[in-house]
Image 1 (tube, rainbow, N blue to C red):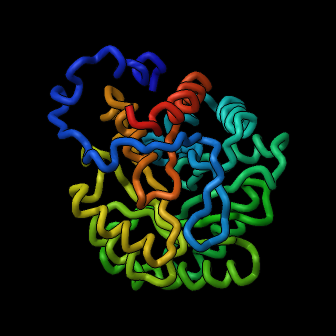
Image 2 (cartoon, helix red, strand yellow):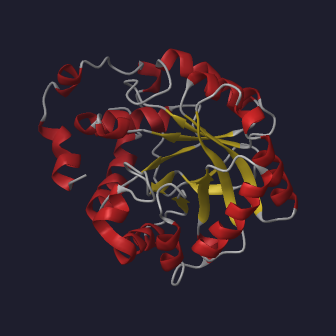
Length: 291
């Protein structure tokens, strides 16, 4: 994403009409207390404290690559991760699918491990696959402990049956101190509902924005499920906050929505340059206040 594209919402009058989007609910439009990307927040009942904004690394992430890895390379993305930490962010959103473990390892050469919470994701299904992934992930990132490991991209309502072996391995890994929390990222409403009901889920990565772009279902269907997750003490991390780029003309509105939402502990956005990262850091405090 080019910075000029990221910022062009400021000059697009009537952008909502161009996308055929409805205004976001007023009760989620903004708050009265200034919030910052660097604010420490706790993920549900996990006890894990993260920054309100996570640095995403997987824009168009597939096949062990993403926009960030393709454009920035090993050293460039590592430097972007370091820049986030230097600016008070303490949460990295990685995945095996994105191929971003080596970039985190490079960043950790100068970033103290205790300054950042590391989340990554796996496609493992069996016990054996999961233990192999845990060993490989830790080698690739260069850390003995992974803070959060998620089962990546759950789409089937019956994912706990399909992923039972991997879930058991992650439970054991948490008991052994190899990870601190486990959970899922969801890409259908049924999978999300299953995650809300599953006691095993500590943390959920859920798609949410005010326009239902790249979401699991309509906003009014997703919100009750996320409220139930919060009621049960699960940590809820928002993703697709900018609608996979579809809300570029409405960045401030999308940020207001995420910042005021009672169902999100924090959210992840994948800046693709230092300029985009700095722009987000500047916009979030202003977006958090009702205009």
